[in-house]
Image (cartoon, rainbow, N blue to C red; front, side):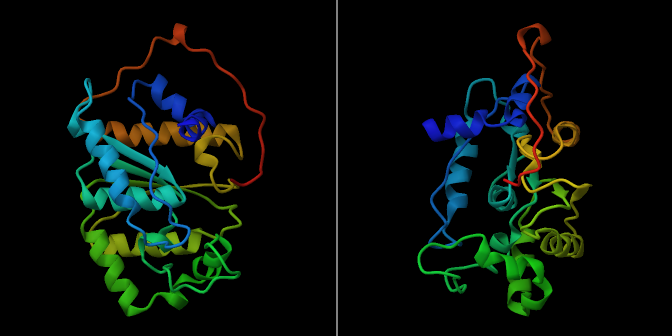
Amino acid sequence: EDQLRRVALAGPTHTRFLAAGYVTVTGTHRDRNKDPQAPAVRDCVAVVEHVKKMPGVDPNSVTVMGGSGGGSLVLEVAGETQVAAGAAGEPATILFMGMMNKDTPKTRPGEFTTTDARIYMKEPRRYYTPEVQRFTREKIKRIAAPIFIAHGDNSPASLLPINELLMEEMKAVGKPADFILYPKQPHGFYFGRTGDQAMGLKFFLDCTTFFARHVKTKPVAIDSSLISQTVSKPTNTPQ
């Protein structure tokens, strides 16, 4: 509970959604550090299905948003249950594509780390075998919701090449996604904790504009007199 509260309050994006009139829910899921392909999506789908039943929630207007590994889960959720739209910040699609799994070599004994994934993300086409492509395309075909992908180009995790490949595959399968590149932004900027704070706000506005095109019930913003604004110190430290 304490961890979920810290995540929900760690940056302005969550509270911006709340102020804009969204019911906001921060979920958790089973660990994927030992098995990158552990079915964490089941936990996320369970959260979505619970939210659909909450009082005051239109089940046809539920959206999902996540970044990095959570961005990969946005794609997974959109293929497993009905949501109005999904927004993925720099999704770790090495997970979505199944390219990283329990057989992936580790740089050191124990749990998987982001270091184990970097070579595949930097040169994804080198490891994008016909088998991985078939697996990826089958998962893309199941995505039924419109998808928005936000990306910075200053991420040491080198996520851009693999997500450019993802965009090509989504288009090839007939599931093109909206894509916006945010110049000079580090990994995780979309949560408003890192990078240019103005770009964090721009992501939020781009995201809500995208969601507004697809939700049936439009959110009603909270009275501005009930909201106090704080200014975070800008940082370029990646998440």
